[in-house]
Image (cartoon, rainbow, N blue to C red; front, top):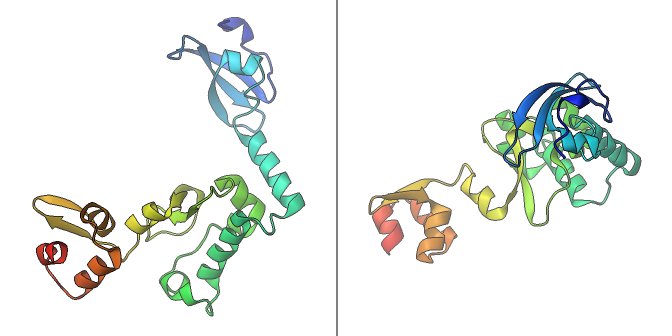
Length: 201
């Protein structure tokens, strides 16, 4: 069912559709909808009528905050990641502080509350860690993502790009392609070896 203009002005959860915005690729009518919180979102009529979308996203966020406030998240991998992030930025006795807090790396003040951090980032996927997209910026919702170890290694300040035979890629990818241990490549680069010598010896 298309759920066309007759739904405009009705309330569905926290949303009220106010303007038709055409159809999506599946032929469903889309509507600009205003949420109780003041935000707006384009939603299909069917998702509102059927109850699969009830807000702009604020309801899910509130539920996540409530869940983590109640249980505090203690003992979970997400909580441990959050604690580690704070410690790297603020604890001068932490071994990693030199590369974080001492460099001016901070975290969003709202993330001092674990419930807000968990609501913004969601639960940590297995095998992933918290990565800053831009290593020169701090921890925030806009600059962080859950990343695998391989993804993290490509984004470290220690990793560099090497050009060999007209191809440029990071040390991690060269190690994988040429079956050379990453620490070996890293050590050769630190010694000042050329890319050719590093990747052919």
